[in-house]
Length: 66
Image (cartoon, rainbow, N blue to C red; front, side, top):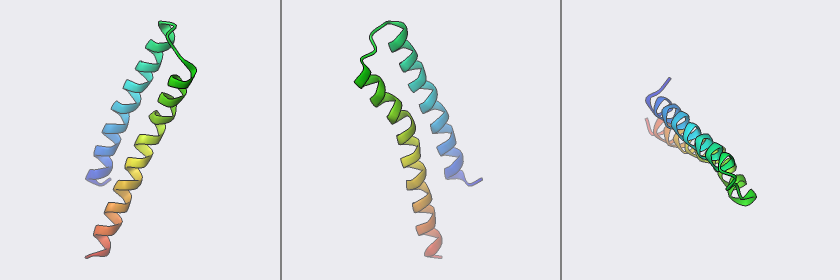
């Protein structure tokens, strides 16, 4: 596993844990607006996926230059 993948995995674990904690607090406090909760749920998955694609593309671009 490459360094960028390890850093991405660390970021993803922290990101998902904090997002789920935030969602849990929103629902526990009965302050969950459907739009806000849906946006947070989508961002919980979309941000790590976008970062992985960016890291993969950067790695492929650097490897092509060698």
